[in-house]
Length: 361
Image (cartoon, rainbow, N blue to C red; front, side):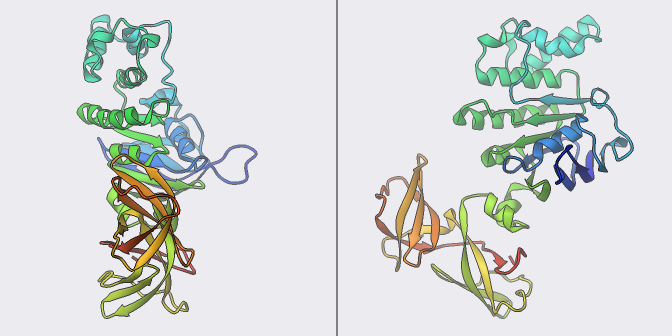
């Protein structure tokens, strides 16, 4: 691995709980990793530790063959060859775009510095913007300038802390894809912090889900969604709710009795059910597992709906009181309080033991 974080522990003075609690992960050369989680989960603290802005209490951080951080050693941030892009971009208002890009290249020969600035402007698609100032640029253009400035000194690793947080939603998604293309073209290894799942999915080759200082899973987006390793990951990724269910084995497969009916042939590789719970479990019902069907026997009341352009996200309540969620095409514009038919159509099922946090499927 190019970047290797091992058993990392970091504390802030006056806080009993560690900000980062025994976290381990790795990034290969040219790979893009994303840390995601709720506010206060430790993702920015972890990023700052990698940058060298915070000392660690235990574990270590390595980049290539070099040890950057350990309990007894600490390489200063300015000696790590790491670039950073902050939430507010931190552009110098008194310098134009080209001068901002050249700021970290003061020791370079003039001709090489000018060529590098020109290359960076081309890389981020701002060739004609070199003489403009930050206040003359859009938010997206400012973000590109900040990225180009961080890349100009040829860092070995790029760190980005909520780089799109100041932009509107539509622009964020577009820029996330553009940023990925730019960094892949530059063959740069990068680690992002974000709270936005769609942003994480657009950017990351691998994504880490954090909660209360711990890294629950470090995996690609598909595995996080379909094979969450903990209940927190299952609840955090995507739209869904857990519902009580009864599991019954039939040979190598399992039948699930759910609030929306039976699910057959759930899986052919499930471990034994937890002993002592008589087959009781919790099944994760995601919004894309539930289909609106007027002919379905199961009915549910619409208690909340969110318009998402091509679809609604409905929150529904069954007669039993159990709530579920469903994606419904937007031409099915039902009213709050209306009862509609729904049925379960799940290609992959995630279940946990009802008396533990153990993943069963």
